[in-house]
Image 1 (cartoon, rainbow, N blue to C red):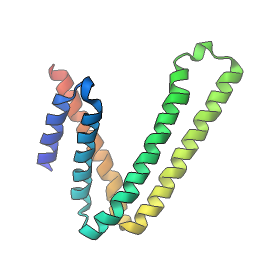
Image 2 (image 1 turned 135 degrees about the horizontal axis):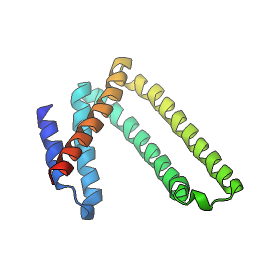
Image 3 (image 1 turned 30 degrees about the vertical axis):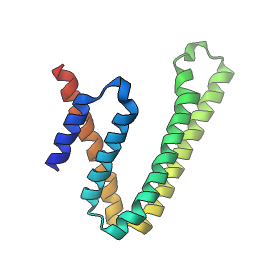
Amino acid sequence: MNKFIITIFLLVTTLSFGQRNQDWEKINTLKVAFITEKLSLNTKEAQEFWPVYNEYQEKRNALRKKGHQEIKSKIKDADALTEKEAQKLLALHMQIEEEEEALDNSFLKNVSTVISAKKTLLLLRSEEEFKRQLMKQYRQNKGGK
């Protein structure tokens, strides 16, 4: 675990705007290693788990991108929207939120058939731990500059 924290720290200290895609690839690589270690996935489990997880992540990212493009960019100018435009935007936001929730529920059902329910819960915890560690290192790095 400590080697992951050190690696995350080193990665966050070297993040630069010009290399965002490479940086996200590095973060995802660390996340894969972190989750694999936390879940103690054996070879068979890993072969079945990662395709399901990666497909979920792709769909989740697509929904986030859709939300950002169609909603968040327009919310900045909310004062300029008519009431009708605002209602339409709010309805779209709620629709995307419902799609995300349905996607999350579907993923949890699917993944718990590939790995145990206990490992599925460990996955949820591990994702949160990874995010916390990443943010902690980012804040420490940002404060040190």
